Every structure is written in C-alpha cells, then in structure tokens.
Length: 301
Image (tube, rainbow, N blue to C red):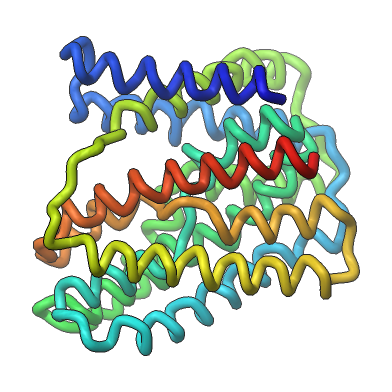
C-alpha cells in the first residue's frame, strides 16, 4: 500500500512540476478535466457497474449522503452567520458536496479496487444532488440577485453531467440484470485505465501553496467545521449502521473528502469575490484528505 501511495504522490508531483516549468498551464486543466468527466470517468463507471451485483443496502448510501448534506448546510448557517456576505455564501456552498470523481476514485481504486469503486459510485449519486442542487441553491441565495430557484436549470445540470447519468443508467441496467456487449466493455476498459493518472496529474496542476494571509481565520474556521463534523458524524454512523464494513468505511471516508470543484464556476456565476479563497481551501482539503486516506490505508485496510 505504501508503494501505491508513492505512485500517487509521484503523479500529483508530475502535474505540479509540469505547471511550475510551464509545460502545462493551470488553464489546461479545464481540457483535462473535460476528458476525465466526459470520457475516462464514465468508462470507469461502466466497467465497475457492468458485472458486479448491487446489494439493496447500497441504495441507502445516496440517501445518507443527501441527508448529511442538508445537516451540514444547516450547521454551517449557524457557524458562519457572522461572516461577511460573500464569505458566508462561499463557505455555505462549501459546506456540502465532495470531490469524488477526481480525488476519491483514483485513491479508492488503488486501495479497494472495483469493490470500492462500486460503493463510492453509489456515494457519488447522492453527492451529485448536493453539488448540482443544494450547493447551487445556497450560492444563489447569497448572491446579489438573491435566490433564483430554477428547477429546469438544475435538472439540466443533472442531465448534462455524463458521470451522473452513467451512474443512473448503469445502476438500472444492473438491477435489470442487463449486461453490455463484450466489445463495449473492452473499449471502456482501455479508456478507464487513463482515469487514475489523468486525475492525479490534474490535482497536481491545480495544486498551489500561496494564499492570502487575511483568509487564515475563515479558512481555519471552515477546516475545523468540515473535518470536525465530518469525522463526528462519520464515526457515529460507522458504529451505528448495521451494514458491512465497506459500506461503513465509505461513509466515514466520504465525509472527509475534499470540496467539489464545481463551487469555482458557481462563485463566478454569483459574482463572489472569493475565488482565491476557494482555491486555497481546495488545496488544503486535498492535502488533509490525502493524509487521512494514507493513514487509514496504512492502519486499517
């Protein structure tokens, strides 16, 4: 396992060094992320869900994730109520949603293989509702225009998310015991192998160690909130839920994942002046979550 994490650190380091030496620029990350979200990640989902059996209990994972998302936003309302409006709106958006596709999938694949991908895939179905629905609505509420509830627009966001639609379609096919042709699986298997290296290189490309010193207080406050409540609820559910170990590990680790990157375009859309704050929090969350997963894999798995 230490060797697997060494490879992960090396790939992230390659992405960071490519940026430092101007081989790739941070704006190139948009192209790479499009390839990941529209090609390699859906291919990985197809391969993972085509042949496995989805236990009925797994359908509780999205529900648990969504309930915790609403709890997190409610708690965040009280924790960040004294912050300035832009910062409060930003931290409220960041209170829910996780970076599953880019961060969790390559690490989970390295630790648990296809079984882990199945569980975190179900986790990500609930996460998609938080990222594209709840987080967006919260940001809209704190924007200058106020809450603009556009159900059609939110539904379009779900429909345009190829990973999310792939989860839904493959889950339905799995329930109906319908399997894709061998030729399709062969092609998607080849594409899926690119998901881990591309995702890790992209994380390195976005990695930054500079931040505004004036943001230290809200950043510390947010990190304590996110990881404190995530760990508290994750451990509680780990010991309370009567399901298998992988189910409970998914909940515990899932609540400690980094923030979803969709909040960056949301901040532009709602005219928040906090993009650099989001970037700093994202980088810190990636490093903290990476350390948590390494310790978890070393001590528990």
